[in-house]
Length: 102
Ligand SMILES: [Zn+2]
Image (cartoon, rainbow, N blue to C red; front, side, top):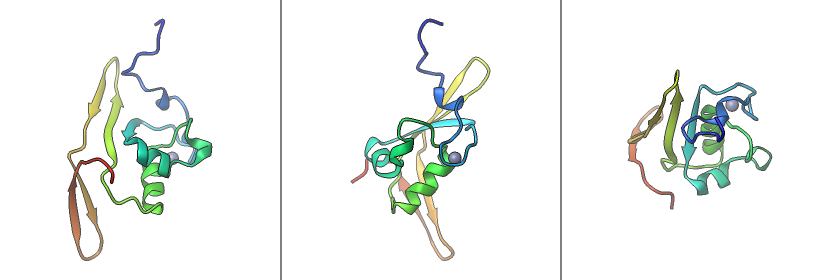
């Protein structure tokens, strides 16, 4: 291949800068949330989705920031788009449809 294809994530080759695990799924979040949450030292590298989610909670992010999740199979890639985010605690839960951050 002469050019890296859009549908194959380079993020699946490198370990997460936070936990060191090579992610099995890539993902996209809205840009303002990425800038707010991703540590500066890892913005140009890989942060796996579980680590990004933990960092987002630590940063106080409450909106549904996830744009898509990519699964790369054998010669094919699926782009999954979340429709809802459930937020739960011991006593209640909340459902948010996808929307842009405030
Ligand atoms: Zn990680």
